[in-house]
Length: 303
Ligand SMILES: Cc1cc2nc3c(=O)[nH]c(=O)nc-3n(C[C@H](O)[C@H](O)[C@H](O)COP(=O)(O)OP(=O)(O)OC[C@H]3O[C@@H](n4cnc5c(N)ncnc54)[C@H](O)[C@@H]3O)c2cc1C
Image 1 (cartoon, rainbow, N blue to C red):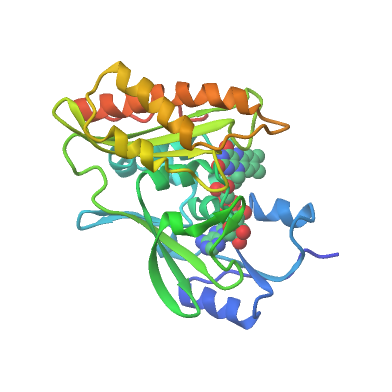
Image 2 (tube, protein in one colour; image 1 turned 120 degrees about the vertical axis):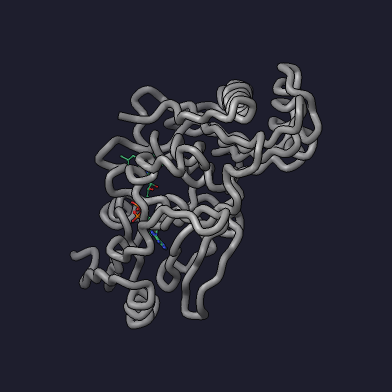
């Protein structure tokens, strides 16, 4: 049995949409294939008439600025993201998140768009984009639109994208890294032999005003069916002083919103509960330190 009958390599988004329209729901977008090909091979998804490969569309691999905003193409590989000095400086948590995905072979082909479209609640690049409050440009039969990143997730592994008709083109992060006293950080807990998803991961964006937190966003996963933004904890954090007790009180508020589960291959819910505290201390501490000093050198990148 073949897993697909035709393989297309369009060079524009319009061409990709035409291919998808031609197969009327029987084709599927593919980028690095590190999730999709396993799903097809292992029977989690049925064979398709065609794969439409979006990695030859130049605009979908670009990492650039326009005005104050950052743009990251959905087909940018994790390796390209890690190599970007622009992102290291202005979206540090994204570089840190993509830098720990899989191993080098995976990162060389796997893309940020594929990570988001796969819609796992603990996709590393996905969590970073959620903390950065990114928007996604989605092209489909009805035209092109910018959507808030959080609107793309409807459940574990379930995206609001129509994979047979929509193309995720690029991500936009408005004004990232330009505000004074603003910084990000990403940390995750992984089994030593783990290669795919983490026990728990957290991305943090923080903006300071003097010795207090002016604003903050956290993205935690897996802690629910979709990447979790603990909004009540974030609201409480605004205006809090920069002291150790703040992180400890924040942990309790994040616990109240996280839905932690025991998973057979990764960790118990109790262990994850403890790790929430570890990650909040580490990631918030690092983001605050970066925001105070204005220096952000990505940490913990894979080899
Ligand atoms: C050994 C191994 C280790 C891994 N480790 C990690 C890890 O540590 N952390 C982590 O988060 N993930 C990990 N992954 C999962 C995977 O590599 C990432 O999610 C990756 O970013 C997926 O990107 P891709 O380009 O390969 O997606 P693909 O497999 O090409 O596509 C995935 C899904 O997204 C859709 N899609 C892809 N691009 C688009 C687009 N532009 N528009 C619309 N739909 C699109 C496809 O139709 C498919 O449904 C690992 C995978 C492997 C095999």
